Each structure stands twice: as structure tokens, then as C-alpha cells.
Image (cartoon, rainbow over all chains, first blue to last red; front, side):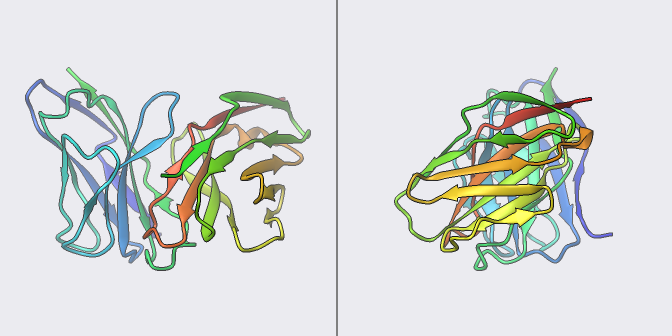
Length: 115
Length: 115
């Protein structure tokens, strides 16, 4: 079955450490997105990518980095510059960003906590 | 910038009854799309229903329907014959017509269906 796979489901980070969250999709979607979800709040966009080898900052990109070397993969690195990284991270994809009525498909999320 | 407001952080409904979740948005755009997403306790976010702003007819998907009031910038979700499986957090989302798939989400409404 096609879908979006995020791993790991739970992740712990030590102070000063960079960690990378994986997101893979086999839906042949062009666009991919990373959101951060905090308790009682909606989703905030961190980064998004419309095509391979291209990505743009979202609303809260500071302290995060991404790459899009393959269509299927859009890993998110939470750097030590992100001072409050504890949150739930959701990856999403959509068919074609030019067809803007297309909804996003979401992964199961990764919960990141600080040790 | 667009904003999406869900004024009801929590709601509850008895099984088989009808409930309406409210959503308002603020935009100067004329071409846009609106979505309701559902995030059950298992955490995978899924699309419930979508509405194109240029369509006057309200969208309907089985037990889910919307009341789209463009002039009032209101987009409420009505769930008829509520089922226990409807228990989830519901997010309203706005997408500009030319925004490459980027969505702005509300803070969510946690709906509990009681037996």
C-alpha cells in the first residue's frame, strides 16, 4: 500500500546534538512538507519542497534543515540551534503543488523529546 | 498572511447526535481552498472534506458536510449521526489557490463522542 513512513516514532535528543527525522513516501508525490505540532496548537510549517533538489523555508525554519535529493525522501534535521525542539513532527506530501486543490497526505509522526 | 481560527478547543457529543465545529478564516484572496482534517488518537492525520472557494454548493461526504459562508469567511463542519470512531482532533485548513500546496491550519478542536 502507498503511504508516508516516518521514523523513528519516538526520538530523544541530548543537549547540543543534531538529530535527523526520516520521511519517505511511495505515493509518487511531487511536494513534501514538515510540520511541527505542539500541545493544544495547530500545525506550523517548518520547510516544504515542491520538486527534487529544491526547498523553501516555512514559518518556523530556524534551527532546522532539510534536503530533497530524491523524490521519495525529505529528511528533517533538528539542529542544536533549535532551543525548544520537544514537539510532535508531522511529514506530509501532495500530488502536484500546481494543482492546489489537492489535499495533503500525512505520516504517523515522530515525537521528539529532550533528555 | 492568512489566519485560521477554531474557537472551540473541545467539544463533546452523544453518539448518533449531530455536532457542528466552527472555523473562521481571514484572507484577502479570492481563489482558495478549505479543508477539514481529522487526527484520531492514533495520530495519522486524514482528510475529511474539502471545499473550493469558487463553488457555492457546500461539500458533502457521507455523514460530513460543511456550511461555507464566503462573505462571512466561515467554514463549519457538521457531523451527523456521530460515531465513536469520530473521536479525534479536527483541524480546519486554508490554502491559497497559488500557494504551492502550503496550508495554514487552525489550532484544532478536540471532539469526543460519548456512548
